[in-house]
Structure formats: structure tokens, C-alpha cells
Length: 414
Image 1 (cartoon, rainbow, N blue to C red):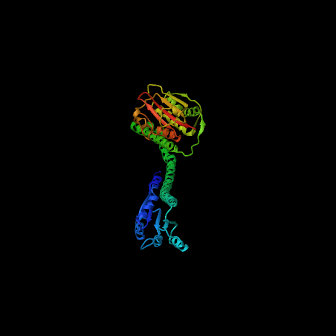
Image 2 (cartoon, rainbow, N blue to C red):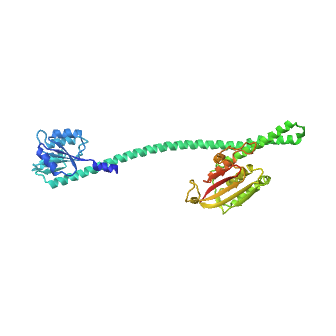
């Protein structure tokens, strides 16, 4: 719109050339009120001087019979300039009585003749045709300049995109290399690191089984510490492996009954649950679309977390509920109001934590309590959060000290 306005507001200039002042005035009177801007020249030499300074004229109206340099000579000189040769020239003359005279006019560069005395209507019509053509050409030129500028921007953008693509390819290559290194590390963690641990555990157990009575109390304590440390190391390695395996790319969702997953986890943790005298209460509604093997890890880690941080004097109670609900009904800005979610809540009556730590607890190796008081590696809840994120969901935690903790999980359901 801005460019269109600039085209319309740009004045259309007409150069009128005549050695008589009254003729110059007469031309301006005939063409008045048309929005034209007139520039006067009283001789051919004067016209050439003006054209050298300003070449943006829509048309030249030139008298043929002028002293010193007539209209034909002036037109021939104008046509020698590459920038001026396309400006249309209309000759104004009282003498047009021979074909040779007419031919000379066209040969010198005129596009038309008008015989004096001039017809105002015809002059207005001819000038309007050439000025409209000038406007169209000027508009086309501006459009071409805009297109050229746009093409330059597109070329620059393409060059920037090409550079970004090269950078992305380089990053992808580096990432592939890092993944290869990570796979190698995973192999080392799963085999090479655990093998010496198994030997340490084996020999420590043999010593404790066969030589325990022969050891001093201090020696017995030290071997027990060795066994405890190796067990913790193996637990830490297994948790790190579980954490790394949550970065999967093959996400195969299945319509799954949560009851089956929780039953499997309860069976796997049966001894731990019995030891804590824990009760798990479920209220689950319908199947949900999840990645089953990941969700088994999620449920196992949340139940383990509740078992670890239970209160000694109070029997542990864990409530697990699920429901399908629209995001618009949930008080969470991170959820889409047009999408359905499976809302899963895990609530326990354990020791809880201060609400200010509700984000910190999901970090790797983040612990709120000393290992001497509560066992664990500090990775379990980090695994839970990563699994939720792999399902494109979110997890929140709320709690008060000695009043238990509640974990709310929202998994989108397509």
C-alpha cells in the first residue's frame, strides 16, 4: 500500500519547449487541472540543459521552428542519450505541408505531430495516453525493483538456510558420534563395570561366609561396608542404565490396562511391599495409550520412592487413581484445552517434603535427605519425569512435610 501511494503521489512532469512565452503559457492552460508538473524551456539548448539534469519526464512537447537550434536538431541530440531516447516527443508546428517535412520529424525521433492552432481536446487526449503509459512503465519499474530486492532477500535467506543446514548436518554427525560413544559407555556400564563388581561381591560374600568368626569386629565391619558399597554401586549403574534407556526413539504406543502394569510391579516389589507393610489402593478407569515397558519403569520408581520415604510409625498407604479428562477441565496452563488426557495421581502418606523442592526432586542425583537416613541413588524420580516427557506429558508434585506426597501425571490421549 505504501509503494502504491508513492506511485500515485509522484508527479508526472512534462517538458514544454517553445521560444515564445505565450505558447508556453497556452500549453499549460490547455493541460491545467490534470495533475501535471510543467518544466519550461525557451530554446533547444535550454531543453538539453534541463534534460541533462533531470531525465524523469513523461513526455516532451516541442515546437519545431525555433531559432539557432530547431526542434528536429534538438530531438536528434536527445535521441543520442540512452537515458533520454525513450522519452516520447510530440512536435508542435504550423508547417506540415510536405511528406519530406513529416518524414524528417519522425526520423529525428518524434512519436507524433500536432498542427497549430492546437485542438485542446486532441492535445489533452494524446498527452493523457503518453502520461498513462509513463505511469504504467514507472509502476512496472518499481515492481521490478521490489522483485529484485525480494529476490536478493530470498537469495540471502537461502544462503543462510544452507549455512544452517550445513551446521545442522555437522551437529547431527557429532550427535551420532556422541550416541556411538554413549552406546559404548552403556556397554561398558552393563558389562565391563559390573564384572569386577560381581567379583568383589562374590569374594566378599565368601570371606563373610567362611572367615567371619575369624575376623576382628573392625574387620567384620569393614567387609560389611565393602559389600554395602558394591551393592550400592551396582544399584547406581542399573539406575543410570535405566535412565539412559528412556531416551528411546522408537515409541510404540499400545492401548494398555494400567491394572495389569500395577499388578506386575506389585509382584516384582512384593518383598519390599511386605517389608514396609504397605497397602496399595487403586481406582483406575479404562485403558490408556502408553508405551508399556516405559510405564512399568515409571510405576516401579514411584512405588519405590514411596517405600523409601515412608514413615516408620505409620503403615504406608499408596493410592493410585486414573481418569480420562479434557484438558480444559484441568487447572494447568501447560495442557491443551482441546485435548484429552489421562490424569494419573500417585498419593502416599510418607514423610513428604517442602513444596519449594517440588521441581528439584526431579533432577538427577537430587536428594533432600541424607543417604544415611534414606537409601537410594537420587535417580528414580528423574527417570519418572523423563518417561512422562517421552509420552509428551507433564508431571507435577505437591507435598507437605510428614503429610505425604502427591504426583500428578497428565498423558495426552490421541
